[in-house]
Image (cartoon, rainbow, N blue to C red; front, top):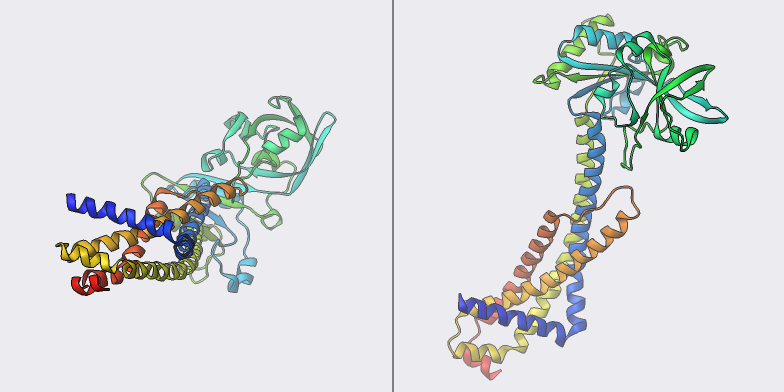
Length: 416
């Protein structure tokens, strides 16, 4: 153990001598290692951070929820015309699933009949989108209220003139005034504001961005909008599985109920699509895998150049210390001691280059986090990977020079 510590400290001293003695040569040689680690770890950090942000945004949709829609979430562009001819899900489909599929714990329906103008006293806001939904919306989505509440069952069933507003609508319409209990005008009708939604946040993809939403209950909206025309506005039905019920079973039960409700013949294809969160995450996973491979290839060639450069430094180091190696061996130094000495020196040089590359990634991540809508994390795993790669490169770059030094004949080495 004492011998190893002595060899280790000596190797560190010699590595630092290389850095100090030939600064430009060592810097240029380690530049390849730094760039390689920067490329690989930088790409991995960016890809993992982007993936976490996207998956975190999509997770709000729920991984135990099926979405019945006209269009599939997967890319099937060759069947576009078939999908185009399908009817949109409507309120009847919602009632079919709610009443005839026991595997569904919660079923909800929503449609967006366009944009509306809302007024409060002398203030008005244009462009808010009307979001018509059933009373289960808050139990399907993870929606955070800033103030107020959702409808009571009595308010929803009776179609009371009460609504909820998104964060942006509230800011533009009321300013600093508390909106709860205030009456606003929309399409000639007066509505009481019973709740406001929290700001959607800065997710890269926000599936629940209700900042500009005007949320009205279905029973209320059915009084002044023809919601029975399923192809006029479009719509979506969402069904959440009961505890212990798999999505596959829920999907089979819904398929049977909807096919019977829509009177499809046994040989006819489904005229609806059932989507789930895993479809999006699988597609994202494939995309991010390609990005990781591209970054890995770029980094590999940079590291290859850097490894060759470090090997060149080690060959020069062996050449410069040939006589010293002969003296050490003449005094009884074993081959593995000489081998270990040069391997440790090579690893230390590569570690210095790798740490510089990690430092560059860290600084770039801080800069990008201040600009991008999602944070870039270097991550402990990526740091360990960067250090590990540096050690591996140092071993490969130094093994041949170290082996040549260890095999030297002490007499010939001292004469040189």
